[in-house]
Structure formats: C-alpha cells, structure tokens
Image 1 (cartoon, one colour):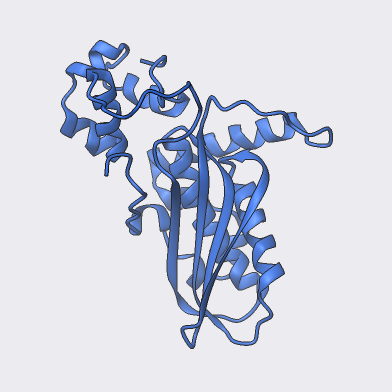
Image 2 (tube, helix red, strand yellow):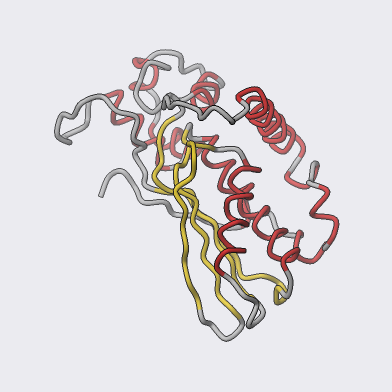
Length: 235
C-alpha cells in the first residue's frame, strides 16, 4: 500500500496498525472505518485502491489532494504584545504541522490571518524556501509574516495559521547551500516523538517552554478542540 499515491510514511504506519499492508487490503477495508481514522483522506485512498477515479490522466506529480490545512482561534483575551502572538502562533502551528504529518503532506506556503478587537482583519502569506511540516519552521515563518505586517495600532482578538500549496512526503527538492539537512532531520524526528507522546498520553503531556509564560493563552488544544475542514479532493 505504500506504493499507492498519497500514502506517505505516516499514513502507511497508521494503515499497518489495522493490518492494511497491500492495495488489495485497502480496497477491501471498510470505508467508514478508514474515514474515522484518516478523515476524508480515508475515502480518497479507498477510492484510489478500488479504481474509483474519473479525473483526467496526468503526468505523475507530487501535488497533494487537498489545497491547504489551517487552524484559527479567537483568543481567550486580547493579544497586546509580540510574545502573546508568538504563543498563539505556536499553538496553531503545532496543530497545522501535526495534521500535515498525519496525512503525509508538506506545505510550500505559510499564511496567517489576523483580526483586531474592532474586527478589522487581514491575511498575508509567504512562499517559503522549502516544503515543510516541521512545527518550528511553520511557526517561525508565521511570526515573521506577522512582524512584517502588523504595527500594534490595536490589540488582536483572533489569529489563524494555514499551510498551503501542499505536496506529498515523497516530494523532492534541492536544498540550498546554507540549509542544514541534519538539523531539519533532527527537528522532524523530534516532532514525530512529540506526536507519539501526545497520542499515547494526551496533548498536555508535553508542552513547549514558551507555553508556560501565559497559562491562559496556552490552555488551548487547537488540534483536537477545533474542527478544520480542508478543501476536499472530491467536489
């Protein structure tokens, strides 16, 4: 089943837990069960395994079957400084990055949305240097976009983070000369360990030190307490 398009490492491991090792296993699986564990991607993979696809034949590529994954939240109190925003951005980036990893995707665009306490809002995005599903990278890009576009004329009430222009885990790209492949691999492994700890012991079992600076703002499990509806593959 790992040879099937859109089955990345994370999805392959998840399918293996249910004894699904071949495309035939996937085709015979219960679609509702797949949906309960993989979300809408379950139906997409089940349809692919059964040959239910009437889209035009295209050259092989690494485009993801959904366009973006995002999360936003109305904060429990107004955000009044950069550190407040950084905490919330990391919370949201953790949710977005975890969803990307779960489904075997990476993003090539990071987008933020901001709404102040008088309901004025704006959205900004940035094409990033390399595709990523690393929490720290997504959060850092989001914070950079925020710093470049907000002047604190008013307190902030709502923030969103989105990863867009998605590609699959098997996407290959040339890393620039000054990027550390070893460092990124360590960050990927660290994120995977955090995902596993939270899966086994709950979201709050492991937290970034940044979250302890404001317990009110950090008391949000953005991944499990917010429902996100990405653009679906099937119309």
